Length: 402
Image (cartoon, rainbow, N blue to C red; front, top):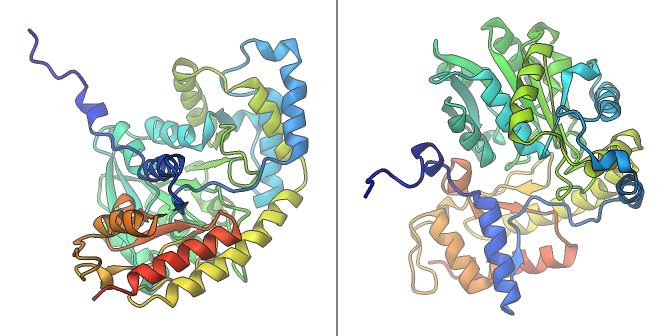
């Protein structure tokens, strides 16, 4: 009998998505009759706008969409994404520089798989979204964390990035607005970081999927537009999931230099072929339409943002900076670690999150999932009443900590 492992080391090293795992557990508890309120999944609680759904219905009736189409995306959608990019960020690209992917996650993986050779280093600002490390690892890259905290609003400085740079550094991952913190870099900060990357000949992979979800005085700045010195060493990741409440439709994209896009398209041609044609036509309706749907969602998210930050900061031992974008709060709970609560002394934010789920029936994602233990991520993309009830339960339980 063979003694070789059944699962490859490469795949065995991949961790389950912590955010999806928390969401699945919360839904399972709900199905069992427990009144769980989940702050886990980063998913708008709004339906996809009707005109987008109707475009999909019409597409499903067209025989030409029942067949294979180009692996890199429908030509009309690629052209529309190029036009949308110019409209929203001022960055001019050709349709040939666009690759339509099966959601944003595929764009993340294909970007790193195309750019990295084994041993190449990627600077990643922590806290970071859970998928980035796994994509970098699968591509053979080495993640180098640049750790930030609540004292700076989770923003990294050029000095921190420079301290982490080595001769093996090839890519800077730049994310603004950020998942999981909601941090948004100002134009000045973005320009300084982009010029630093250009000076050292680094590639910049920038995830712009939350570009339309910024609040107060914050503004989204595309590093690709703000720093033309980067030239053809920038790759943009984006998608329709967050802006148009289309998480389940699975349409994202990658924008970059023609040679990178061609190579990534070759990879996709063997991995998945084309994205669902029906979903692509829904995405075409989304990106060619106006932004009224996201404006409505942004108003609701802003209201919830202010509520959750106020309520979290009223809980003893919890400190939550005000997020400027996306739809997440990322409070520190470091002061509560090790304190007695319901006869237990959780020694990590992971253990504290488990206790909260069991005792208060509230699901949060612990900071361990995002590279910074001692924190929670709470998505406020849920109904106002559930948000208030969930944080109230959280506050009532944590007030017992001694």
